[in-house]
Image 1 (cartoon, rainbow, N blue to C red):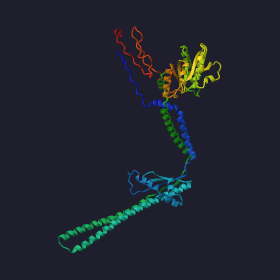
Image 2 (cartoon, one colour):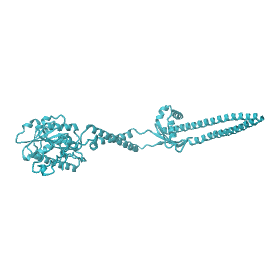
Image 3 (cartoon, rainbow, N blue to C red):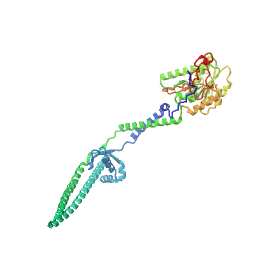
Image 4 (tube, one colour):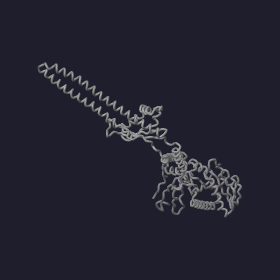
Length: 504
């Protein structure tokens, strides 16, 4: 039985990690909730400070000569376009006696086709009475213009038909004269000509009667279309509800603000490139996540849970310090206050076994400047790290934020625990921290996450593969390489002997 000694190729990283994106956007809920709230307030403010002007509405029934059951609405859209012309606007202003320009008046009204034959006209004004008067004048001007166009079309069609009828009558008169002249002629040829003339006269007579009928129908259809075009809904003022308008504008503002906030949070997350999943943080720092501390909450049961997690972490770190003679340090990234509190509590837990000195290497010497309480350990500045007496246990506290003096970190402790706030450092900076600590020969025991995402189910433990197989009667077979690879990729076991003879 054998296993492959070749390492598996790493899985291709996705162009966009949706899980990390969702978690990062959720962590920025203050941003998009604030933007959504601003949109809601802006909608309410617009409804209150910018109320809609007084508006009147009327409905006109428009009859078309080309009406068809399957009309897609082309005719009514044409009527809407004609409504927004200076000719109709000028006629309405003329009937109102208003000196306003038609171009300006066209901006105060709009038309909309309800069906193929119903046109709704909405007009605004300085008051309800003015809006109603404007709507009535505009509807009357549109109806008058539509009726005029119908009558002009009917008269033009009838005139064209009568002109054709008169030309046919002239041809008929010529045919009658030809028949009168040929009555005295005899012979076969004369008889054939007379038959053709009589057939021509019958055709012309029929066509003249047809043109007369069509002209009469054209004139009879115009009154029907004129009577069918009328105002069916008298102009009336539209009542605006402030509450309804405010609710509508607030809902629109809320939706737009929420969309804008989510988009801004997503774009900011992609641009910032700050890991928020414990899997990504552990992979970039090259150390496993050993503990998590939730952020402070106003709920009583959550505070109790946070204190319990803090106590467990302090106990675990104290056990780690007792198990080695090398000094330990806590290095923070984005959580100096939490790291200082954790260091003081850890020093208190270790004080029962001997004197402990906290070496404050935080920016601004936060711990050295604080007022010591009863039972607090001694705190010295980072410049006194080498002057700690031999009988006292040093506990270093420092920072790996931008601007850190990397060469000074080794004086705080050759072993360290990184205390990192989730989403604080970028991917590039986490790589920088891991590389600088490795250059300073500082062993990273693990990572403590502050304020992790409660829905994060990723694994923050780095795994280098299963233990190497033991050869019967001999020591454990060494792994390939003596140092942990920087990318923390799983290693696969070497070939396992099939029998004792092969092992020997």
